[in-house]
Amino acid sequence: MLRNEILLVLGVSLGQAAVSSILSFIDLETRVKRLSQATIALNPPAVPDRPWLDLANQLYRVVFLVVPALLALHLLNRTLGNRGTRDVLGLNTQRWRFDLGTGAGLAAVIGIPGLGLYLAARALGLNANLAAATLSPVWWSGPVLTLLAIANAVLEEVVVVGYLMTRLREIGWATPMAVAASALLRGSYHLYQGFGGFVGNAVMGVIFALFFVRFKRIGPLIIAHSLLDIVAFVGYTILVKHHVSWL
Image (cartoon, helix red, strand yellow):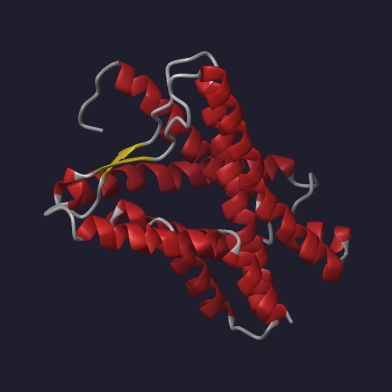
């Protein structure tokens, strides 16, 4: 039952994203000579010429990004109980200072080398050029990009770390195998970016999974991931306005 549950949860969330990402990577590899020749828009407008309808579409994306994470938490609650799930995943406010401080620290540890890896992979032709945010320059673009960053963080850290690591160990997987599975899944649904995106996110996946094994808290991971994506999405928008071409 738990094996089937894991497959179904991944099938409606990041497992599906991994398959789509692999197919996108194959398409890119067979279309361009170097991945760095391709540009991928991560947060494109849905209706560019109708800002209010575009806003509705972006908010729809935010809501349904979070739904698979809520499903995973619901399924954990059915076996662990609401309090048990909060305790197992560390989703409580008992150590909020630790969560905030450690989350910010993890963001710096992951983000600075990650930017260097991205630039190196692009220079070697192993990664596509990422346009982190291409929304129209309207008043709500910054808040919406922030919400999208947080929604992505909640989805990935709840499902790929908290839920998946917990369930894999419940069905008898050793910790190293669970860590590897979590990291490879994270890397695979970023493969559409190229080899650099796969490797960078897989390494991040190992660090985050080991952190969860050690501290039993996904709060810092959600905070770190949110900060990384907010800086990437909103920062890209600001830098593009100032024509920083090397990014």
